[in-house]
Length: 401
Image (tube, rainbow, N blue to C red; front, side, top):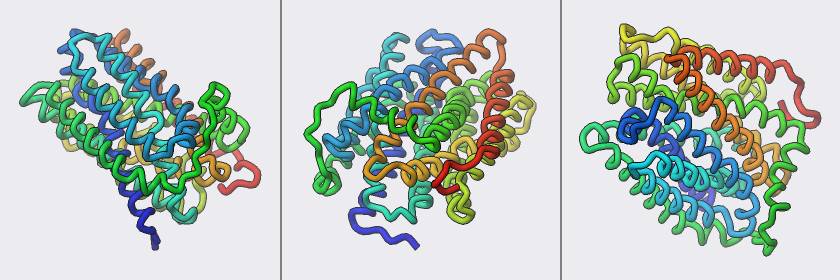
């Protein structure tokens, strides 16, 4: 049974709210990508370019996370990041594609430090023995935010236009930003601030920490491909289904179904890792399943019954989004004492590389081949191979399985 203190509960609820809004912001444009692309007169590669620009920004700022969190505190960083994100979404309402892509970069800068910040808050307030379940429950907020993105934003777009849909996102970001401002006094009051200068040397600390650890290095490599397939599905599922003559509202509902699957996946896989004490094998199994189910998208066409499409999207979401709770719990558990922010930021850097290059590669294949099926099969094969690799390798010496 979980035993949370008052500050632990506050950190847990704050982390859930921040995680939810962060995920919603990251998928808002993807959920209405066909409409935004048409509004900007952009081609089919737009969704991949947008995700790529977002995660370029996230890559850069994730490395700064540990240094800034040590300096200012995790709740302070969350507050600033959420207000920056709200400004980036406002900029996304522009009529010029280049400005929208720049707004994605700014949004990435805002998103990058959020995961290290909320993981730091939780790791300081929660018992280590509860990490798997607490972090998996926290990660469930991600699919909830994405599901809201897939349900609410297309609906607002169909009635009022895509800019109104994005305005809804701005309002949520501002509200949670004020919540972070409210809890920062209690969450950061006992934090041991360090008056150290922010320098390039310190920004490299996260990467040095990861490459010096056999386990963290292995997790980083795996995360490149797991995050890559996750973001490829998020970026192109709506576009793919729309191309197959499904309506934008149904395609958004399919994305929401996938995201709801992520809720069950994160809880279920977290419970499995807690019960069987073999996080590596659980993560390996998830990789194989996410690849197999994503490959099945290649067999969908306009004649496929809608309930089968929704069922497949649910299975895809259980796996493509269900891995991160176990994953981040292991980073927190295996990070050196007091280095959770740096470890999370360093591993995130590599996962963000996957989020940049795999969706862009997927979009490139789709644009030049005239269909997305080949892209789904390519990334599926890569992910299955990654899962098999993780299953076969031995555990790092002196660390749990």
